[in-house]
Length: 144
Image (cartoon, rainbow, N blue to C red; front, top):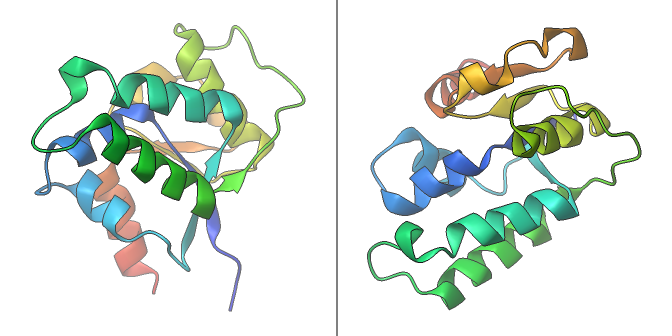
């Protein structure tokens, strides 16, 4: 069996997955851990997840800050942790998107899974594709 492909999740995918259990983001997160793909994290990206997901305006339903932190600890436990040795800044218009790109480049990820495809324009030269969760799920379905 081949190694799982590395992917990086943009923060907006986690936000969407935690706000609704109906969409592609939730379906993708529900498949973790997966033999087909490996989530890659860096310390800065993890802290970004933590900052955004525990904001009061992001909290929905019955989830508590403790629940979110437990989810993020689980994500960290199953993810590949990637050190960053070279910063690709400024490459994109948002420094937080640069942080996502740097993890993807350092880990040789195949995809950045995001809902904000426009934010990552110009990264083609890195050999990384941006893709929305629904399209990534379709790739997983087509490649058993």
